[in-house]
Each structure stands twice: as C-alpha cells, then as structure tokens.
Length: 255
Image 1 (cartoon, helix red, strand yellow):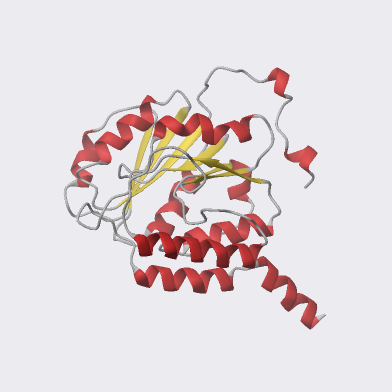
Image 2: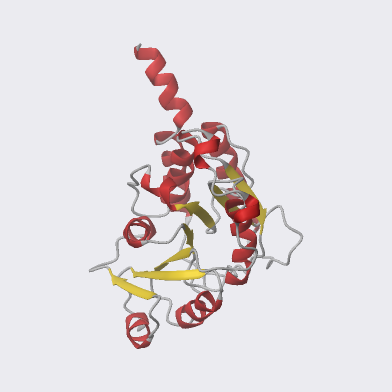
C-alpha cells in the first residue's frame, strides 16, 4: 500500500470543526472510582462517535456503574472472566466502527480533552498511527516512580531496536489508528504484552507513525495501578517474538 493510497481526502476538503469520527476503546478492570468520570469526559469530546467499554471481569462494583450509564454512543461488553488488557482490546477493536480508533484507559491518567491533538496527524493525512508521548511534551505530568521511568525508557529502546522506529514512549496508552490499520493484522497477546506487539505489527506493516506530546497524571499502586515487573519481562519477550526485523533476518537465513 502506498502513502498516496493511505492518505485521506485532500486537506482543503476536510472540515476544520470537530466531527464525530472516533471510536474510543476502553479496557476496564476494577475501576469503580474512576470509570464513570472517564466515560463522561470521553462522551463530552466532540470527536467521539462511539465508546466501547470492555469490562474485564471486574469484581468491585464497576459493572453496576456501567449498567447505569445511558448514551446511544456507548456499548458495554462484558468479559466472562479476567483475561487481561490485550484480550479486552481485541474485543473492543473488533466492535469499533468509526473512521479512527483510540485506546483510553479507565483511570484518570490520560485526558480525553487531548483527542484533537492525537487526531490532527490522522485528519490531515500525514499519519496512519499516532502515539501520545509522555516524554516529549512540556505539559504537566505527575512525578512518580523513577524505576518505572527507567523501565519505560529501556523497553522503548529495545522496541525501537527491534522495529527500527524512533518512538519515545512505546508503552503509552494513547495510541490512535486508522481503523484499516487494526484490520490489517491479528493481535495475540492477552495482557500488557499487547503494547510491544501492536508496535511491532504497525512497524511490520510499514504504516506511517507520528508522535504527539500529551499530559499525564500517573497513579500509584495505592490508587489502583496494576502493571508490575512480570509484565516488563513479558514485554521483552514480546519485543523479540514479534520483531519485524528479526522476522526478516530469519526469512533471509532460510532463503
């Protein structure tokens, strides 16, 4: 597929005002304290055409809150048991119908008011995929764990070496796509390994990737943060397993 084929309509023909063109996929697990607020903020965005919440077996009352929400743009999907973020995203992506798709966590770490910045490179035809980077922005971000910061940097470096991309924040939640990008590959990871897997498959498809700076209000483990060191180990495995560069070298070695 050429860049010309991937481009959307000419810039001069595109509306300048926000329009509902975005499916927001929200994987959710035990977020009783924040999920209603997050969904309210997502629905308040003029870009939002559809919200797909995938509850991943919550046991803390989250499902009761979701059952009370009523908006024609909102679709709630219930996993029969906890399967992980990757499994929830696969189900949510399959249900997305809008022109563009973005991932939104069900906590308050990422701000839906920044959808316009995430969408800009997609709307003007420059990008097929946009990552929201917590590390290239002058916007406010909460100061938290040093070793998480180091881990994110190391995982991004390893991912970049395996994909030949120059991302600054591979592990970011905010990833926005043209829907046809997600339709072009099959995702396999059930947990947080979905992040390097997505990045590897985007790189393998040679889709055009942009980054934009975003704000970040990180939370502590006491606040409900769930990712741990085992997920970091799995991420390294996924970086190697799905690497398009290593796959190319293997093919060359057998040819």
